[in-house]
Length: 127
Image (cartoon, rainbow, N blue to C red; front, side):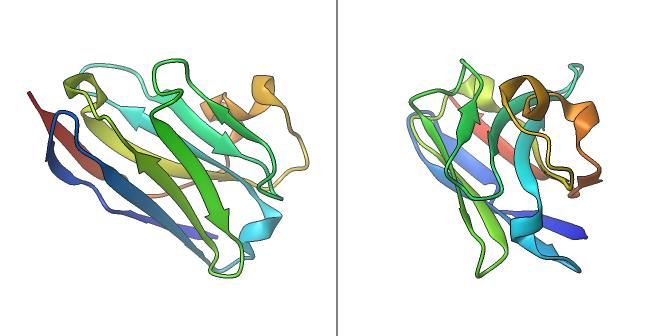
């Protein structure tokens, strides 16, 4: 499966962006999906994940209450709605797909458990 992330850009603190991750070459509903981000000089970190069905979601504490992950399996697309953005949210955001049936926060929050990655989209939040 190929993943194409989009929707990044420059926004002022307090603003909003919606990231999209389009999947091709596979069926989106066959994968759990995650969003990770990497700021300069830092490791790639977990942001959010969503189960195959879309019924279960997970969030890093740093984004809980501000970000919302969702998926449209008919359009094979996963979204990350980001509200109340802060300068510390500045990073390259990556979407990822896990084709296994493993689930749960302990599994889906680990970047090594994802087999497929998109190319990343840059989000810059100015103060």
